[in-house]
Length: 239
Image (cartoon, rainbow, N blue to C red; front, side, top):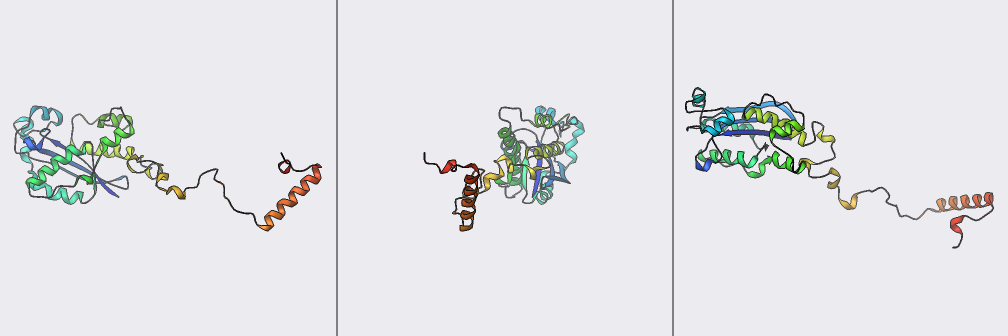
């Protein structure tokens, strides 16, 4: 099973009001194990960088950080490689609705079909189901699972995707997920997939008539017991 853990950095919160992607980072995993393959690109947003966004990820195209993003390709030059890398794999994101909104808006601007929402899995939703009421940010989950995130001074799409991949594996049961009693996304015990009428429970009684040989052995046993004790079997006495 191939999945892509990914994250994005942007100029703000809403592509429909002019915000753009500035970074995409992807990590490939198969059967809940990292393969070592990654996709990473900085993107020239062709606009200025708001101070609030700059403080989060430290990327800029408007005089700060030596106009760092102006040296990188625009999205129309990046998307073919991105689409080829993700293929039809499930996309795992820390806030899937936000990331998919930006990806699909950018794809629409270059005449490409949007990625269907059912292809994305939101780790925040999984974490909220597993740890209701707890802090479930990426930093909080790294702390919960003892994942080293000391290098995360600022947000970065590839670094966050790599950390999220480790978090996702833990959310799904760790590297020994296949031995766990829970199904994908903590949807309940694997046992629940067995049809109810087919389940065997401790204490179930097999109802079937004894054979003639079994009945004869039983009667012989009772007779020998009665002869030895000098009294009838208790369960045969009339109440």
